[in-house]
Amino acid sequence: MSISPRFLINSALILFLALVPFIAEMFDDAFYVGLTTRILILAIAALSLNLLIGYGGMVSFGHAAYIGVGAYMVGIGAFHAFEDGVDWMLNGYVQLFGALFGSAVIALVIGAISLRTRGVYFIMITMAFSQMLYFTAVGVETYGADDGLSIYSRSDMMGLIDLSNENSLYYLVFFSLLILLYLMHRIVQSQFGAVIRGSKSNEARMRSIGFSPYKYRLVAFVIAGTMAGYAGFLMANLNDFVSPDMMHWTRSGDLIIMIVLGGIGNLFGPLYGAVAFLMLEELLSSIPLTVGGLRVGEYWQLIFGPLLIVIVLYARNGIDSFLPGKDKRS
Image (cartoon, rainbow, N blue to C red; front, side, top):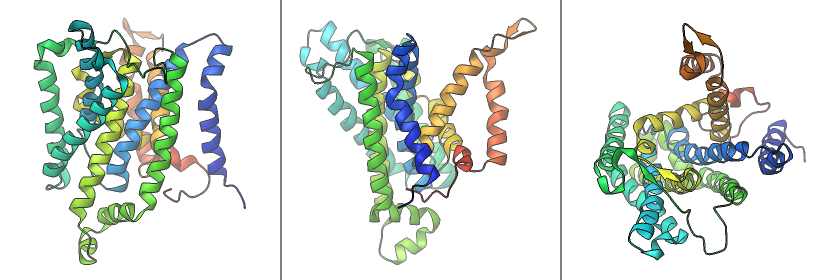
């Protein structure tokens, strides 16, 4: 059985990511462990959004809201554990359940309403719900309002995983990404995935053969929201901080850019997109050049914007366009 070049490239990327902590230790620079952890967490969030946009044709501008919900479950738990002595709220499994359940319920409510609309109306209503949650978080003074909430202790996983150790957190995120990539592959290749993809291309035909696109889309919406909530749980433990900015609609825009960069509707597209987005942000923002008294690195978006336009114009499927072999949407 022949192994495709695409498979080798994807495997090489995964192998490199598996070795990042060892490489960082070799060069005595732990910064890159934290940076790569952030990349992988955002890749999980982008992977979940890719299920909606890439396979279902549902462009959601409110996906970051679920990341915020998952993150606030960690922050609120830590807050009450330290301020009120409610120790069980520091339990990582309780926080994880709250993050998954809370994001799933909110995704169910938002999806049930939003999926009754189409096109630009769907985009606007998902963004509106996201902003509602954002301003709700801004208005709650108990949890820091727009100043955010510091997390003084990471989730206690009862000795199974020490999240206060950067390498342990990294490998939790790394293996979570691998598992979710596999699950996404299984979802897309299942009958459920076929209905989602079929509804994107021809909704009327799906109805005519006995499927209800609305129900399938709603389930996909909840799955994607729950995955994003898990990404929020991980992000809160990485940053030791949560704030309303995590659920602002512009954060959803960042996730969409990652998908476009990596390749819409491709399994590894969100991972490549997250790597490209975060590395470009890091590199461009560190440019020391000064023009007219202004440091170019502070306005890195002015450089990133034209790059994104070029990619959209000349590489219609992002980084995936440069990979050898044909993607079978697996």
